[in-house]
Length: 114
Image (tube, rainbow, N blue to C red; front, side):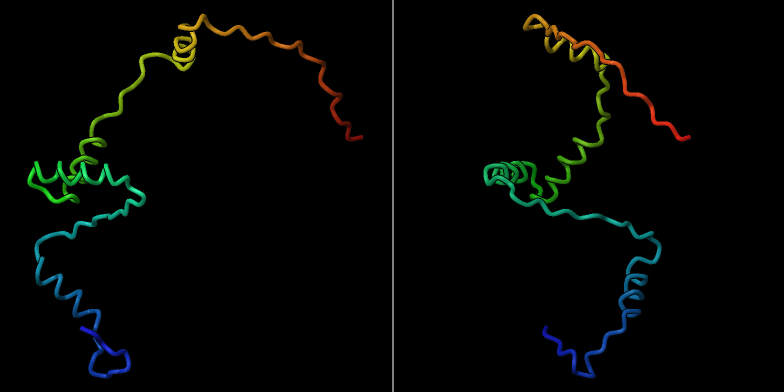
C-alpha cells in the first residue's frame, strides 16, 4: 500500500501500534532479538547451508541460527599449556630457534629539571 505523506487521512498514531502489541501479547514479556546480515558469503557455503537446512527441515535462517547457537554455547576450551610452552612446542619440531641477543648499551642520561 502506498501512502502519500501529504494525505491528511493517512496519519498513523504510533501509540496504536504499541497498543496492538500489548493486546496481542498481554502476558508475555517482549523478547528482544538481534539480527545480522552476512555479506560476501561464498556461494558454495550458501548452497551447503541450504542443503543442510533442507535435510533438517528448517529454513536457511533457522539452520544458521542453530549452527551459531551450537558453536557459541559450548564452553571455550582452555589451554593446559602456558604461552611459552605452546611457542616452544611449535618450534621444537624443527630443532628450536636459538636467537643471539645483542649486548645492551647503557641508557641515556635522564633529563635534569634544575
